[in-house]
Image (cartoon, rainbow, N blue to C red; front, side, top):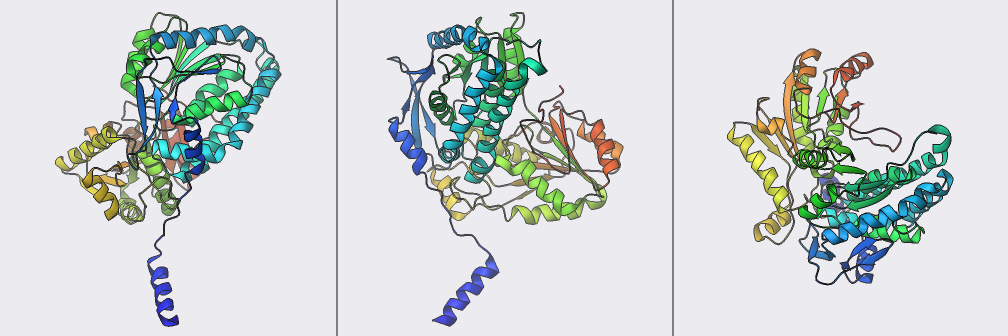
Length: 481
C-alpha cells in the first residue's frame, strides 16, 4: 500500500497538475437571496420598482445559470434620477471638502467590509477569475475611494478655484464593472458633483451591492443614483438636458454616437474608448519577464481589457525564441470556472462576444496566419458542444499577418495576441503608432535609455516600461486620440 501511495505521489509531482480549489459562492448567493434575486433602481436613496417595467436577467458566463433579474429603466425613471441628482447637488456641493471626505472614506471602509462578497459576486456575474476580482478589481476600486477622499480633504487648499461641474451621467462597460464604477463615482463625489450611473446590461450586480454600500455609509439621498436599462435608455440618459457632463467608457462606435448626440448642448464630455495596444520587446529585454508580462498584458480578464497588450512587436533577432516561450506558456494557462482559485482565465462575457472572437481567429486562418492556441479541458469542450453554458475561449497567438489585416488593426476584445516582428527602434515606433487607437503601450528592454527613448515616441496616453496593465488611483489613465 505504501508503495502504491509513493507511486501516486511521484506521478502527482511529475505532472504538477492542480486539483480544483473552489471558492464558496455563499456570500454572494446569500446577498442575492436576501433581495429575492430581483432588483429595482436606486433613485434618491431608495429602491424603486415601478409596476409594468420589463425585467432583464443577469447570467453567469461560466455556467449559463441565471443569477438575478433587474428592472429595465424607462425615460421617466431617467428623468426621476436626474431630478434627484439635481435636487441633491446644492447640499452636496455646499459641504466642505472635509465633510464630503467623511462620506467617501465611509464608502471605502464599507466596501472593505464587503470585499469577499463583492469579489465572489463580480466573478459570478462577469466570468473573470476570483483571483482577479479578489486581488485586483475590488482592492483597486476601494483604493480609488480612499485616494479621492484624500483629494476631497485638500480641494480647498490645492485647487481653490475648482468648482463642481454639476450632475454627471456615467455609462460604464462590462469588463471591469465595479472598478469602472469607482473610476467614475469617486472623483465626481470628491469634487462635489452628483451622479446618475448606468451599469452595463451584462454586469449589474456589483452596482446593486454598491447601492447598499452607499446606504450603509450614510450617503445623502440623491447623490448617487443607479439604474439599468437597454441601449435606448442609455441613449436617452446620454442626451438628457439635465446633465452637466457625460462620462462614457466603452466601444469607439458608441462613443462617436454620444459625441454627436451631445454636440452643442453645453454638456462636458469624457470618453475612454477602445485600444489595440502594442507591447514592444527588444533583444535587450529580459525575455522570461517579457513573456510573463505578455501573459498579464493580453490574457488578464480573457483579453477583455481596453488597454490589453494585444499586439506583440518583437525584435527579429529574438522572435523565434519569444514565440516558442509563448507557445509553451499558453499550454499551461488554465481555463475554467471563475470561482475555481487555480484558474488563470474564466469565460468571455457572452455568446455574442465569443462569436466575435471566433470570427476574427477564423479570418486570420483564412489569411494564411499561423494560429497557436492553449488547451480547453474535455469538460469545457463538452459543455460548449452541448450548449449547456460556458463561453470559454483558449488563449490564442496569431503570427504571420500583415499590418493591413483587420485582425492586426481592429480591437478584438478577447484572449488573442497578434505577433509581428521589427528590426530597428525606428521601425518599432512606426509599427506601434500605426493604429487608430492611442490608449496605451509598453516597452521591454534592459537598456533604460533605449526604453525611455522609444517610450517617449509612442503616441499613447499611458506607456509602461518593463510592465503592462499596472494601475493605481494616483496615476493618470487615458488616451491621446
